[in-house]
Length: 271
Image 1 (cartoon, rainbow, N blue to C red):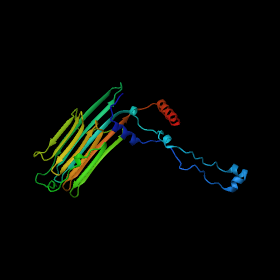
Image 2 (cartoon, helix red, strand yellow):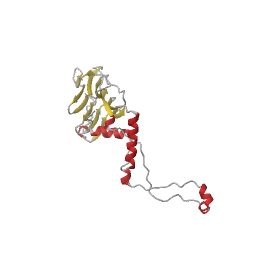
Image 3 (cartoon, one colour):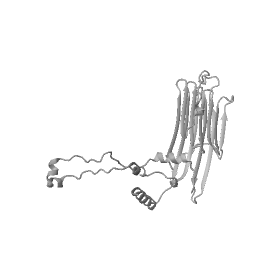
Image 4 (cartoon, helix red, strand yellow):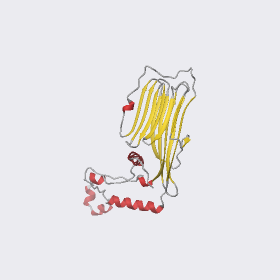
C-alpha cells in the first residue's frame, strides 16, 4: 500500500507518538567519592557495592539514537473530521462539517470516501444577534505559517471561542454526519446574513462560517503543509468553535514482525 500523506502529517504523527527510547549523558567524568576506610581494607572493598560507572556520550552519538514511533508503513488509513459551529444569542446556529477517510481493503487497495454537511437553523428574527458594528477584528487572514496556525481575535464581552486540532490513533474513529460522496455543501438563512460552507477540493479543504458577529474558518492546504484555524468575533455572547481531528489507523502486525522490528532497532542503536 502506498498512501500519499503530507510531510506535515507524518511529522505531527511522529511528534505525537514520541520516542520511547532514552539516552543519558553526563557533563563530568568523576566518580562518587568513597570512604577512605573502605578503600584501605580489601575485605571491606569486597562488600562495597560496585561504583556507578559514568561514560561520556557526545552529541553526535545522541543524535543517532532512535525510539519507537509510527512510521509510514504502519499507517493503513485515516479519518479526518473537520467541524465549525457558531451559536448566536438570538438562537441562530450555523454549522459546517465534513469527513474524509481512506482505508486499505483486504486485497491491498485503497478506498476513499467524503461526506459534507452545512446548515443554518433556529433563531428569532426580532432578537438581538449580539453583533457590534463598531467593533473591528481584522488581520488574521494574513497570518501564514508552515505547520499549524490558530488565531483568535475577539472584540466583545462574554464570548466563547475555541480552536482545536488533534491527531490520534483510533481504529474505530467516528464519521461525522453528512451527504455521502458530496465534496461540498453550503447553507444560509433567508436574509443571507448567516452562511455556512465546506469544500473538499484538489487544493485542500476549506470551511467557513459567516455571521453578523464575525467569521470562523478552517483551511488545510497539503501542498504548502499548512493547517489554519481562524476565529474573528465582533460582538457579545457568541459561542464559536473550530475543531479538527485526524485519526490515523494502524495495521495489525504479527508477533514475528514485532520481534523483527525489535531486533532491527537494537542493531541500529548499537551501530
